[in-house]
Length: 189
Image (cartoon, rainbow, N blue to C red):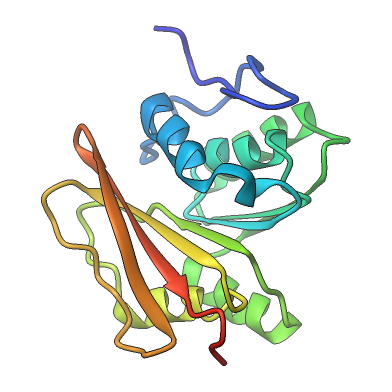
């Protein structure tokens, strides 16, 4: 196995830790590549939120590809240690903040600070239902024109907030994973 690596950008090829952390399912290289193909130039200079960060591979990939700031949220201590080690490999490429907390509490903290993210990426545990209020709280951290990407098990519909400020975008299937997009209206609230 080639191992977990950064796929593109300034840190391309750097090996990441955490592939074997218990309870973590890293986003595959194929899905990460597809994600950044979908996002395209939107990543450059963006504030990027990686919720349920696991190893940090997705958020750190964004940093390598030019994101100005990445916030990685993870509650599993072993995964947080791996994220910290991985972020150290990319020091100098942009700001990486690691928050060790559960998703709901971390989102409340970010909202209270007034943080906004042009891109929000969620990769929750596939076999647990994603509470609609959590998805809505993450979506409200988007500025007008921002995009939320939800990675979920293929064949299962993506939950979407019932809110006129948000519109469902395309879903992209890659093996057993799907990436579903949600956009915040450019003229919305």
